[in-house]
Length: 80
Image 1 (cartoon, rainbow, N blue to C red):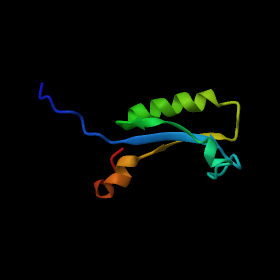
Image 2: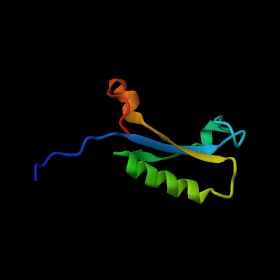
Image 3: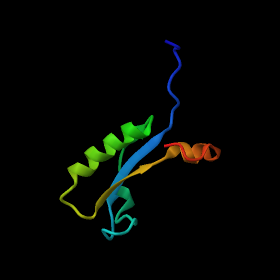
Image 4: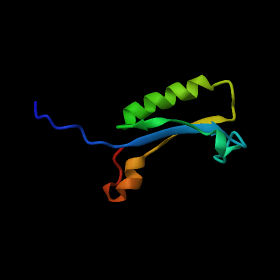
């Protein structure tokens, strides 16, 4: 075992109620739900699925996965 940690590719999962089901503008920014920050896409996707499933009855609720690592290191390009 090499003892090296896997490369961190940070992802943010958050969501809230949208003004329109087809848009991306939030109705009230003070009520955004930050689910968490995750070390990789797979963990973020799992958290996103759980949060999205919990609000499936509200068509205006949406959760998003933000690739923080792309914002922190834009030169790294297309890694998930």
